[in-house]
Image 1: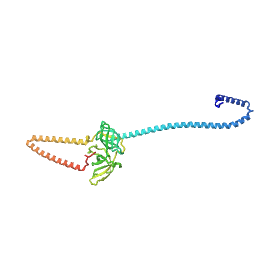
Image 2: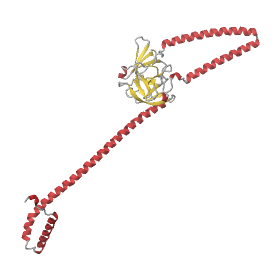
Image 3: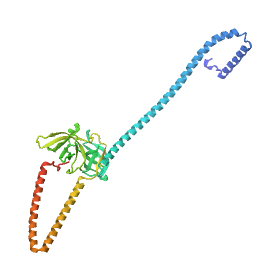
Image 4: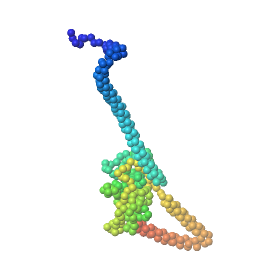
Length: 359
């Protein structure tokens, strides 16, 4: 007969049998208490240590089960907390990025308010050259936004460059640090003109070159350098940078210096485009001079007409002589004025930087 073919007793019958035995032993222990006292003593001596060991084992197993359960709960809680930390870290990074962008936009708004007299529009830099310096770059605004070739570009509180090429929704900018860049400038606090020239080699040391400074002008380090009113392409009064290291040239006729640009040409993200072109720009003083010139010409003509009419009323012969004298005088004055203008133009051309080659 195979061992596996034996019929197993169901557990419920075993429990029932053990229960009956317990009741029988309980009955005998109560009824025959005195007779079984020695047996009870022996049984207690044997069972008590076993019971104590079983209790310790049970307690140990229970504690381990509780600890295991607590460990699993702690691990789950730790995973949940880790997930929340990662989520909060991502949100913090997002807020930091948004705060950084808001800060840049605020700086751009402050720059717009600084040059409120000009029509401007904000733009984002979307491409640049392959070097670490933004000597040429592309912005996301074009003809649809009013951008034209020749528009001045501002960033970080000062002049960054000029638009050289424009499309429907983009524009290419050449910065003032480019080797081909040349800007007519004025040193703040003086009327002396100079030329700021881009130099990609010099900008690695943090500066660009300034030349053709009048030797008679005394300049202190830190003096502001702004675009001049005689510039052909750049609007006047745009901050370029600060003067340093002024020295006399070898010809002893001019001075040279370094300019520390206010724009960070290693990190350009947002810029401000001035939509006004220098070719269409007139200052209030220029308009006033034109107006005064027209008024003076008109007043002179009226005065001559009145004088001639008065003399004709008095005497025709006297009028003829007077007109002859006036014509001679006028011709002489005109010749003298022409000579003075020619002399003044010649003098200015030898003392001021040439702005025709400005880029």
